[in-house]
Amino acid sequence: MRVLGITSERRRCAHGFTLVELVLILLLVAILAALVIPRFTHASKNTRDTSVATTLQFLRGQLELYKSQHGDTPPAVTQLWTVMQQPTTHNGKGVGPYFRATPLNPWNGMTSVSTTDVDTGAGWYYRVNGTQYELHIRDVDGKPDRSY
Image 1: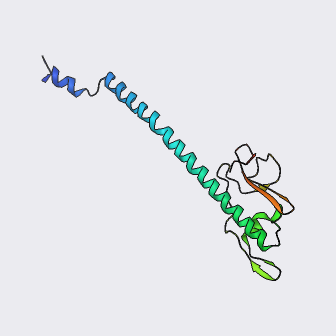
Image 2: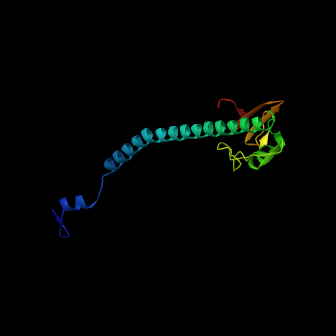
Image 3: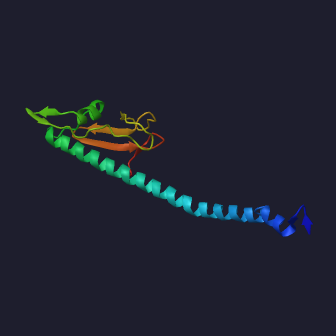
């Protein structure tokens, strides 16, 4: 059948995809997204966990170095990042700095240090007891994450 010079077969092809074809394509894309997105999310979390563990290992190592160079005394809580980033002296010899930049907590984006058990306004937990210390990263709820 000819309508305005176009055959019905040509007219059918000129209309594009049918609704069923579009639904099938969308369904296929949704299935692929459901399979792929969780893998990237999991990989991203693993990368961040590894980064946190590496950062804490480095910071604790530098705290041990500070202690060994300062008569087995860890830095005070109020001076932690300041003292660790500047050259200091002990028994007349220059030591430090132990790292260049204040470490950023990737969970909450903060750099501040606190000694309280729950503090949503701090990125790090640090407590000194004589020659012993604890350094932990804080989770998004402000609690020290002792799993690293």
